[in-house]
Image (cartoon, rainbow, N blue to C red):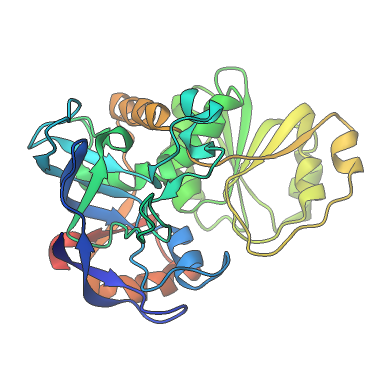
Length: 346
């Protein structure tokens, strides 16, 4: 067991502060990663503030991790010391259920082990990427291609895969009209990836404030959802709407923008329950769906795809001392588009 520096929330809703945490010894199939960069995801804030239920404290958030391998266990075959690697939202799963065997570890029937705010198979709490080092099983670690800068790659481990996985599953590509709802940390990657897949991309955002950015990142069209005319003009337009918004929406209004057999896919997770008139989906055989992250193999596929197309996240690099300020700015939608912590400052 070693002790490393980290930033943790000591209790729910408390400001994060510098501390030390234990890391397990490097086991047979483990890699020790010197974390270089860690992205700040909105879900870090939800969990550190008990928005999604009771958390495990002290909590070290962070599941967008990019770093360098500094030690490998004797049984490791995928990675070597010096390799550039990433860790996303999970660090283990049962490995035995149908989903795990199908490469869908994110939907493990017994529940995957979260990178933080979870208990590992030994009942010990997991601590995330707001720290200097982490020990992870090689089977839940991915390689970061040379074509991606580590700081811009870190957010891909959540924001990238969370948008790539549903876009691939619902067949976004040439001839498909895709709307990305929300132009934030997830949404901006959704725009980049949908464009690179060959779809016609529209951004649906509350205002036109980020229109120039959206078009620059690959959107073909940009509409304000605060304008009622948007819903008249775009009725029955889209094959896929990818909602990255973590606030309650008028789902009936957005379902009206889908073509017959279209899907409104949620990757943003509001803390409050929603209500829905089922005629919104019955009329037009539409789907209201959800999607989590991807499996390990798909996450590697996403990183390779992003490297091939030059798709890093748009980031603002911060020091660890700015984490609490960054949380408030995320809540105020004052970031373009992902805060990334330089972990050398922890």
